[in-house]
Length: 226
Ligand code: CDP
Ligand code: CDP
Image 1 (tube, rainbow, N blue to C red):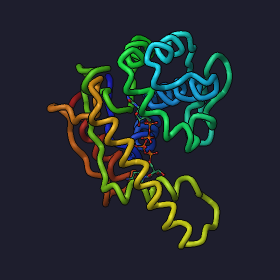
Image 2 (tube, rainbow, N blue to C red):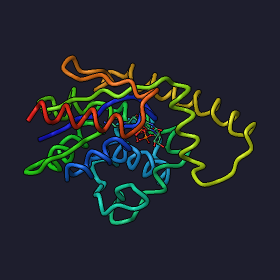
Image 3 (spheres, helix red, strand yellow):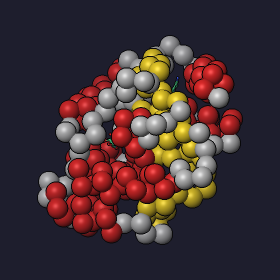
Image 4 (cartoon, rainbow, N blue to C red):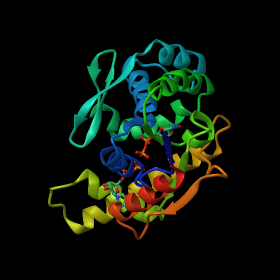
């Protein structure tokens, strides 16, 4: 069985996918980590993200693999190096959508994404999972949440376990809101596999629901599909 979870930045895709994977013993595929890995490699090697051909050549040459879970996330390796933390910096956040808008980069990511799901149950999350990567997925979920709430959650996630002054948090939420709205706009408006809600997806607005409530809802949807 394949479960596709798509949605904008900070809507809860990774967290929900992780819980679904745990509860049902599915493998979790984080496709955003693959585009982040391409952006990181381009930044490190000084490849201009506007040079489409150079970025495609770079992406084709990368070996992106997934390891075991660390701090609740599946670790990501590029050419054998653990880049799990390096792909989550603000610099990668700012540049990843440019790498992901490149049609050749997307084409290079498609085969490994499909290969990952061969012969096993998978919950995959990203932007084009239900529309392009796994159009025949048994269950498609389109996860949304109010943009300000998504920014608030992302900032709290970043500072988990730390004490941060309330005024600083508010300022960071405003900045994060602007960043994710910019990224959502690029992801939704690009020509290659834009972020869309597939017609056959179940749309879930997570703004006022907990992770557990949403996972319970997905559990019921899985039971119906089975
Ligand atoms: O966790 P967050 O929602 O902030 O981002 P992510 O899922 O790690 O994805 C990072 C970026 O990769 C997105 O903003 C998209 O530009 C791109 N992406 C994509 O184009 N297609 C996917 N299937 C997954 C991610
Ligand atoms: O993967 P994506 O960018 O869509 O979002 P995420 O990284 O899974 O979620 C961002 C933050 O929102 C995490 O800290 C989640 O625990 C939190 N979250 C929440 O508080 N309530 C939800 N219903 C969903 C996510």
